[in-house]
Image: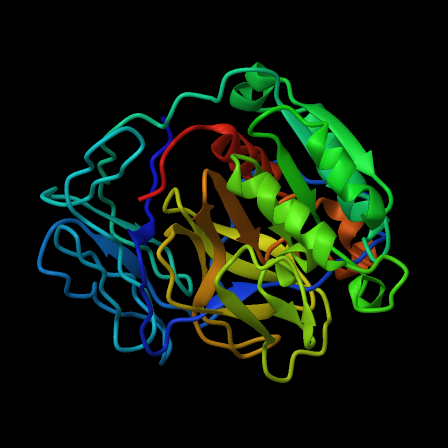
Length: 378
């Protein structure tokens, strides 16, 4: 069972300085892929750790000014550091799939800005959740304005996984080319299937009112009913942009209680973002045309699965949420602003790939396995 460090909770949680982030789209080009491996944090980021147990006080900050340290919390509480980092829910994990960091003596820390983080340990209580019974299926939207490289890359990784957990599930991958056919395609899927919308072109007008692939009220209702009855939705990049209620003034899927806004002064140039994932590790993940989520009150359960570290170059921005998962009726909704499926061919040119960058497609496989599971969100 993988260790999980998540900010989570039923009902509403928000605080000043905490942002949830989604991304826009992806690039193409390049020619080589590196082996899997770790990635350091962004320059200027300080050390950040998750304090086990305690009263909810934040872990100490380090590195450049404005770095959000991640603090622990007492049972049933969330904590937020003054600089905008998010605390981690503590408390004993009752029931399968719940997590616990309360009452433990250790801590988890990652390196920041080149400074070594303190070693420690995290505790996870409960099982990861049994997989839903029956055949596993993943449906990917393949029409405009989808980046064709993106959805085929996602489909190829899921169809030929490298991790044992996803290999055991052996999901069947299919595609739907027209938005008008989405409702029928969803109706043909087995229970607890996953509907994926991946990265897109910068222009999402085909989905808007009057567009060639318009998200009509009836098609939106079909997606909502699919998830509410036990289906899963995975939105990556542009697919995360249309998970909220509206985009650009047009009604969209209304699956995630969030708003999305581009980072200030973001030119859309592709880059690596340093993200602390739910395993406590920091990964350098492909990112382009990013946005941030602002969370709304909700009665659904949720778990924050990844957090951006503050960045000073090439674009200065604060900490924020990179990936978040919600319950939605009997189903689940997972949105991520980073391209966990990205390999070297996502970059416009091999010359644009930062030295030392390696892909982390195993994170996409983990997301899919988690969505297929019956694990109940905290």
